[in-house]
Image (cartoon, rainbow, N blue to C red; front, side, top):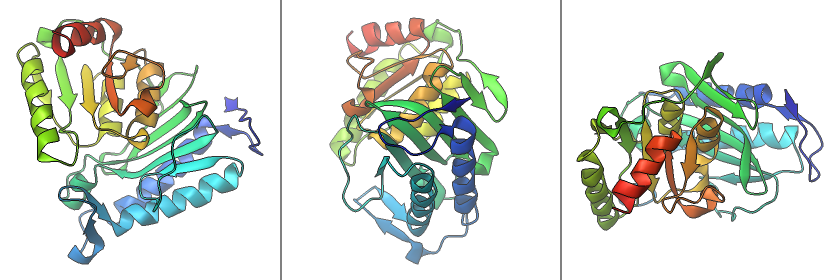
Length: 271
């Protein structure tokens, strides 16, 4: 299916077209996986890394996407000046989500690209090249892992649920708050994983590997594609206050099937 992009975009773009560009970007990243030199890694903060490959992948994506849709804005993690997310047509790019994993040779990293209008994603693709997987979705068209349709786990029992989260923020205080919330959740869940790439973690919820994902301190590029993939797989996505509108503006996300989502909001976040 081809989605007709409005607001001045000059061409139509399909899920497959976005997927093709995202896979190409993933292949570029993978060529440098486990072969980085120290000179190719820099620090944005005490615990936030960026590599030359982030910039190369981002440049490729911006070039390909703006050629396909010249009327769209671009919001990308490694831009020198971050533009605010607006209601305008926007490609939202995380060139490497899970950069720390990438630097340390851990294969749980991805390239994440979404197209949004009116502040909501309508196309999304996430490529995990080291794992040989790509996830994609379009609003109203379902979600896919490679060529296979995926659906969220139906499990509504927290005692049988595997959760996933992140130690949000660039500060030690933020990490401590995340760990405290993780401890509260762990009192009820089977177990919790902390994988380090929110976009890919959301895809794991969408295909039923994880039952639940939550995190604070996120940006739009961390969640835009993944949240659409979860929703189109049958999941519920909100911010930590339970609002389902404007999640990309909120800086937080909770994703699960509707029953488990309700339980998490009522028992862990508000309990």
